[in-house]
Structure formats: C-alpha cells, structure tokens
Amino acid sequence: MDNTDTNTRLQSPDLVAPREAEVVYGREVTFHWDAVDGADAYTLQVASDAKFSDVVLQEDVGDQTAVTVGEYFPTDNSTFFWRVIARSPDAESRGERIESFIAASEEDASRALSSPDEEMGPVTELVRAAKADVSAKMLEPESRFEREKEMGVAYEGVAAGQIMSIAVSILLVIGIAVIILFNWYNTTTAGQRDAVSQAGEYTQLREVEAQAEEQLSQTGVVDEQQGVYRIPIDEAMDIIATEQYRAQQAEERGRSPVVTGGAQNDQN
Image 1 (cartoon, helix red, strand yellow):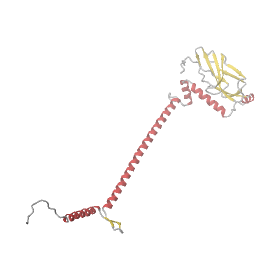
Image 2 (cartoon, rainbow, N blue to C red; image 1 turned 180 degrees about the vertical axis):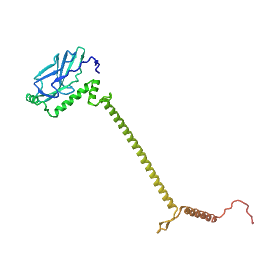
Image 3 (cartoon, rainbow, N blue to C red; image 1 turned 90 degrees about the horizontal axis):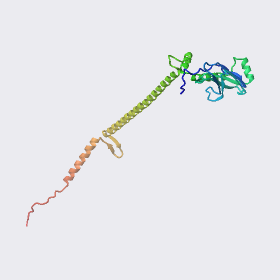
Image 4 (cartoon, rainbow, N blue to C red; image 1 turned 30 degrees about the horizontal axis):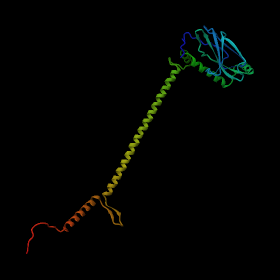
C-alpha cells in the first residue's frame, strides 16, 4: 500500500510531445513536458506496453523538461508509451499521465507530419484506448470520480467501480437463487414421480386381486375334454367338508366293537 501523503505528493507533469500515438522518427525522438511546482528532478520512462511492465528506457534527466533520445528506438512502426515522474526530496508523482508514439522511418514521420489528420489504421485507436485505461486506473479516487462524472458514469457519489461491484453481487445472488430453485424443482419432481409410481403399482395390485377374487367366486370351464371345471371356492369348500364328513361316518359304521374285561358265564 502506498502510504505517501496525498497532500504532499507531486502532480504528474503535463506531457506535451509526442502525444496521441504520434508518428515520429525513431532515431531521434524529442520528449517535452511541462514543469511541476515543487519538483527539482524528473525521470523519463518509456515502455512497450501501457502498464509499463516492460520498460525499455528509464533516464534521470535532472531538472530538464525536454530531452532528445537519439539512435535508440527502431523505425519499424513499433508503438511505445512514455511518462515522466516528477521528484522532490520528500515526494514524487504517481506517473498516471501517459502518452504514446509510433517509432517509424524518417519518410513515414515526414509524411505523417505533412498530413497530421491521417492515422495509421486501427492501431492508433487501440493505443489511445490502452493509454486511457491505464491512466484511469492510476488516478486518485477523487480524481477518478471527477473524471467519471464528466463522462456520465458516476452518480451521486457512487463511482463506476462501486456500480460494477454492486452489479456483480446482484448477479451472484440471482445465480445462487436460480441454483436453489433448480434443485428444489428437481427434488419436488422426483417426489411426485415416486408418488405417481407407487399409486400406479397399488392400482395394478388391486386389479390383480379383483381378478383373482372374481375367478374364485365364479363357475367356469378349465378343461372341457378332461372334465375339469371351476366352481366358486365357497361351494368347493362345502363339498370337500361334506365328503370328509360322510367318509368319516362310513368308517365309524364299519368298525366292530372290542369288549375287554367283565365276567364270563361258566356253562360247565
């Protein structure tokens, strides 16, 4: 975290030239910026990307506000970004002001100088967009809010970053709610399917029982050739019980009584 007091931090210099992806002769590039109150030294930085993660030139230039770098940059229409850090014994600037240039051949630079309205295709717009994005991220919150307010993306003290955070939070809550509803729907549907399945099985069981009961209570032909017929179970049980009773009575009548013990008459 940067603990430098914002009240003592130096302002970043206004960059005069080159600006806005200006096409310049790569073998002789002159950098010019405005002086900053309270600064007694400046550091020139040039990078191949707008985030300055690949710095190709860093030079302390003292209190000068214009320097020429010769025989250093290529002439193949490469794009570079530059900024100046203002310094004092107890403070320095953040370097949020960034400009860009295209290092080209002397012929291309002369042609661009004679036709300043011409741009080098979509590359120029991409360079400008990248520079603006990095510059915005490096601004103080107050400065960023003022800039967003001018652009119409800040409202009643809510910065664009806060609006995005709120929007992301809302989308996250909606996503969680959708997942919960989806799981609840699947669970409910599965329960209903089980209930319907059980009800169907019970209905089928009742139909089978009804059919069996109907067969047990009706008279019908099983095998006419064999002389096999079906009679109601109640009648069948009565017939069986009657036959068993008659068989038992016949068996009892056919038995001889057996007498044991008692007195015998002597005929002698």
